[in-house]
Amino acid sequence: MSIIRKLIRYMNPSVEPKVLEDMDRRNLRGIHVISWVVLFFELAAFITFILTRLNNYNRDAFISTVTVSFSITLCAAISFISERMLKSSRLSHNKYAAFKVAVFLVFSISAIVVDFRHYRSGNQMLTFYAVNLVLVCFILLRPWLGVLLITGSFAGLFVPIYLYNGARDIEVLNYIVLALASIASNAVRYHSQVNVSVKTIRLMETNAALEEASRRDGLTGLQNRLALEEDAKKTDGRVMTAYMIDINYFKEINDRYGHAAGDAILREVSETLGRLFPGSHIYRYGGDEFLVLTHRPAAENYGSDTYRFRQQQYGVEVLLSIGNAQARPEDYQGLFDLISLADKALYVTKQRTHSAAFGGHDRRKGRR
Image (cartoon, rainbow, N blue to C red; front, side):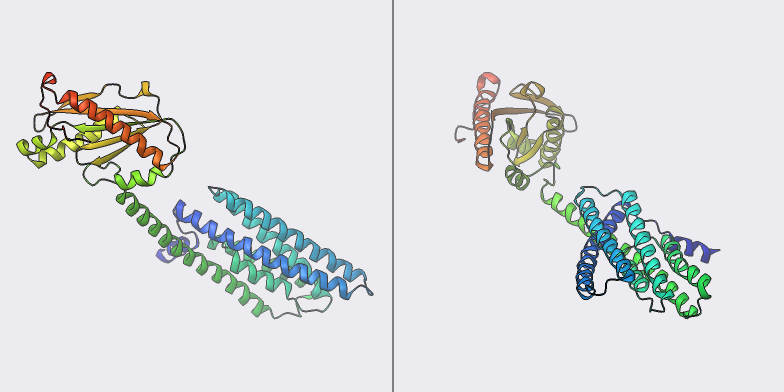
């Protein structure tokens, strides 16, 4: 029973959706390329055939012309459809599966018709074998589906030949061996492609995770200055509001309560900003300064220039000073000009919150 279960799993392996889409796209690109290659050779054969039969264009020549014309039309259609599917941002597996099965069946049936005519005429059957080779090499089928389609195509040629003259002009054993070899080749190739796609997806995920980690501040999880530099290049001229936020007397908090308390406060501030400015880009600008960039209307954002909370774990009263500015930055420099305006607004707020009237003391006279 274990052997049977292994065989079932081998013939119908479980594949992750991301891996399956990668395999589909790879295979679809292969189909697109081979359709152009076959189209080129069919056109060359068609032109050569017409030129050499101008003075002897009989019924057989007409049938050959129709056959080649059909192949040319089919290849052009496959090339067009596959190109449209490749341009899609998300490839539907079911649509692609139906497409490749249709391609396999149409090419197989066409080759069967051509080679049955060749067989009856006493000519070699080369078209079917050539088409089978191309299909096995360029159309990737799940192993169980490959068994059905490949067996069906070989049977589809053998049955009419057998009914015609008992298939006495072909070596049946070799014919069966070729069918089995095609089935095995498809299965092995499918599993090999699964392994390649799995490694590709894992590598992409690792690279994406590393890239995202490089854009994040390790302590707060907010985006960092590198992320800001990259995001600034995407500035598109829409109305934007920038908020510069600073923790009042953060150095004194560190000195009095320790850096563990300071780290806890930084983390809590990052969470607080997420609640005050939902759906916005929030960056740890440096030290105890934070930057919020948002396209949301001002009425939907936090409206005061201060925010106070108590850090429960260490019992620390924390006051945030906030400065903001609004503009339509057109480019990278325009965004940083807006940030500079917000920073100046923060300076004005800090002058007030550090004043004696506000219960503080002015220790930031040297700021910009």
